[in-house]
Amino acid sequence: EETHPKPKYQNRDSFPKRKKYSGTYRSNTRKYPRNDSTERKDFLPKKEYVKVFKYPEGTQIDVNSADTIELKKIPGIGSGIAGSIVRYRERLGGFYTLSQLEEVKHVTPELLKWFKLEKDSIRKLEINKASLDKLRAHPYLTFYQAKVIMEHRRKKGQIKSLSQLALYEEFTEKDLERLSAYISFN
Image (cartoon, rainbow, N blue to C red; front, side):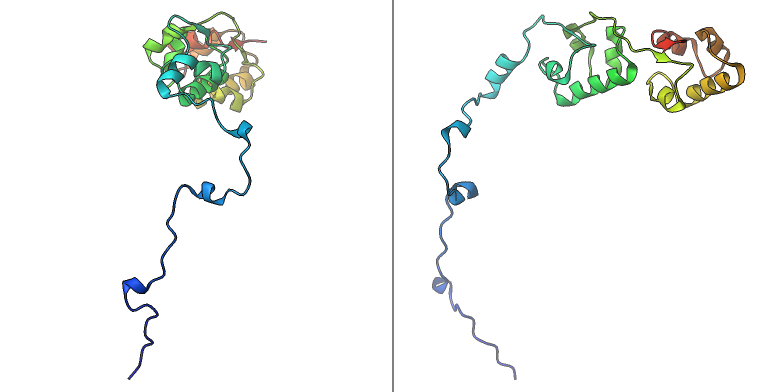
């Protein structure tokens, strides 16, 4: 028969007492006095944050030059939507109408009142020099449309107008209309 050693503590009362935990780990382990200049004293409740840091009603910003920080000051736009707008604008080459903003996920027609188009700063896509990857990166061109452009350039030379692309079934009239502001034939 095996004999098991007796447990060290026979009943609950004989366990050693634990030190009572108070506060946070950081406050219990602090060895150096806190410098007053490092304490955060600018904390505002959420209601005051909206009043202080968001744009007032009636403010309009230029959608082609605004960065994410400026976009986040619009009520209803957070980091995610602001980043999406900037990334889409970069892929597109700039907005030429405000209705294009609705192509960005989560941008509603109610948000359009906060935007304006001041600068005509659209970056054109050089259709006769752009690589397949560069053509595919544009939101208004599909892979198949980019392939058609590459094949046309290879077989028939440079493209001189969008009417040449209208002959291909991959391009609809709507596609060519949307692309007209972004294509350069240099």
